Length: 217
Image 1 (cartoon, rainbow, N blue to C red):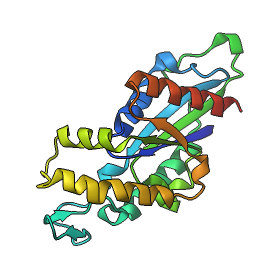
Image 2: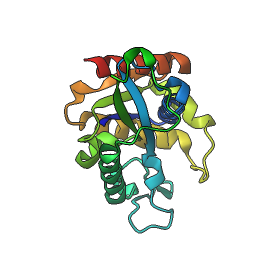
Image 3: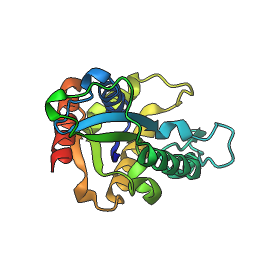
Image 4: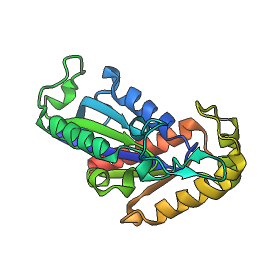
């Protein structure tokens, strides 16, 4: 069983969750099991880095005294040990799983010559900054935005814990920390940059085209 691991990272509000969810739903649909010529999609798994944020009362958090707010733009805001452990275990299971999905549709024209493939999608804004996660990502997408578009999206986005100074936080933390972390990504030249200001359909189609090219290379 072949395993493909797709990473989707980028700035907050860029559309990482939208793209990863849409790819997951598309690839997990039995009707699309033969969408990539020569391959038959088997298992598809989606993992979100945001699921690993520490709870608000965690002692791991670093606080911003100027606004009495948690700095959520850094790796220490999340349980990266648990995330790395779960990713590693998921990769192990998907590599070992050689049982074709029961409801996958066979392409009779290929006479069973297709390669079964499992797909893992890892989504998160700092997945390439942790070597334990990044090492698995074979195709690495990165979604970017201009400052103004990113700020406007941030201002209209609902949050469970309201930031008392959203514009200040974006200017002094989100934007500079985003670029700091991006510059620290190893092998940055290998990233596939996607413009998050495009229509969601265009972003999806562009990403899917890259996946197709990656599989047939």
